[in-house]
Length: 570
Image (cartoon, rainbow, N blue to C red; front, side, top):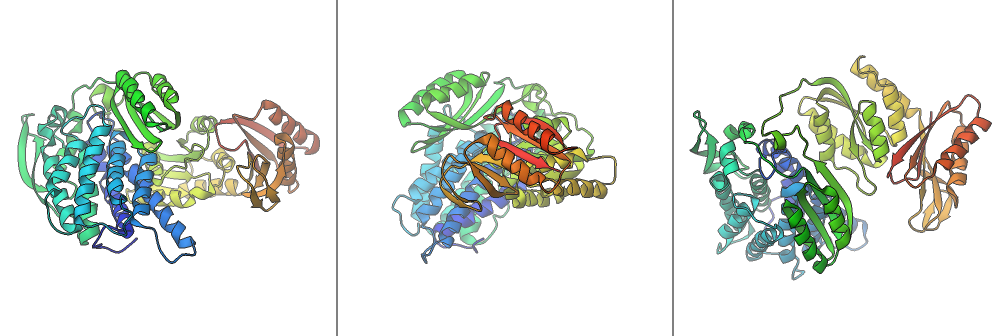
């Protein structure tokens, strides 16, 4: 992480700001979740903002890593870093507030990257804040005052006309945002009834506080503001006093359950969309007629679409008509959540132990769930972020958790998630499973009634004793351990390395299986992807029966899991 303070807005300042914002949101995430009552009281605004910024951080770090790996002496430009920040936030945006934050960051990036200069000054930052607030407001179909949009506009207004460097402008914007945040309960009745400020607005204040720290080296300090809280008589009363860094009073945080019944659409639909501008305008009109909380952000052919609807299928079909939707996420608010009942669910007793596993397909998710695990779905090309793993561990609601990443590339992500939840008093053991078939082996010997350490040792031993392989299709010409492959070749990977290059799925899979069983084995696990016919599994089962006595075979359907076939031998 770059050292602060930064005098000007350059690539290093973008990197620093993103990192500080992620840390600030990480610390405030639970409190922001607790006051989330608008537009839906689903308690995830803080988490969504965190995941959105985490994606922005990953994109910026990738740009710096790319330049470090090159031969040139220069690092990324301001334009490089700002565009990466905006793109990362766009593709990783979650929820209503996360989508709006992505547009705010995109609006700032459009100004900061406009002239492709090495650095920007206070005047440029003022313009960036104004453009961000205006573009975010345009992205929302029906802007509502008392929300993050109000806070963003107030920050831009407060920065307008301020002379000085980036630190001076950032502090003015932060102070203006805090004041506007404290006033949100008076603008939005649902906030006033709950005695809380707007959750999305509070998150933006946290992000702006990180901007102040970037340019001054000082963490935003407490100040004086007005916030609405529920008094003893049940009515709102004004309170004047110190406001924490993120601009909300702790006394308000527990009152979100006071929100009255909220009727609304049953589903949240989010997807990325490859489409032209004219098609997106038509899409806005159609989605606006289908539901509410419509936010469409992005541009230059890539958009992030967010809407609340009763007919999720119609919302996705509208995207198909406009272009190519992908990374589709549909969340059912549920009949038993705060959104539908207007009341907080009664606290439930923590389980003693749980297993949290990352799985690559819907079929395996069902299998793991039936075995009692809490799952995180890793769609092809979409590895989960650490925040998603943290959220899953919390959802498991247990004192002890065994975490199965089931992917070698997720080891560090899982380790970061485990470290975070340990600070919350949860005992976590990370078993470094590198494939879902290793996770299946670990889960098969899991016994929640024995001592935690003994259970972890047994599961680790089972996973380690399972060799894993996958059969997939090469996307491009590449050098491999088995020679040069061409795009479209069928590849057999054993323990992560390409061992076989072929042209037929069944033949390649049989070759891989023979090599694995040559070292012995008692059980073969086959997990078929959507594109693999049952005849392949029948062929492989027959091969095991004929050539390997006393070896059993079990077959599962994994769904859309990326690889054509997963193989485990234990």
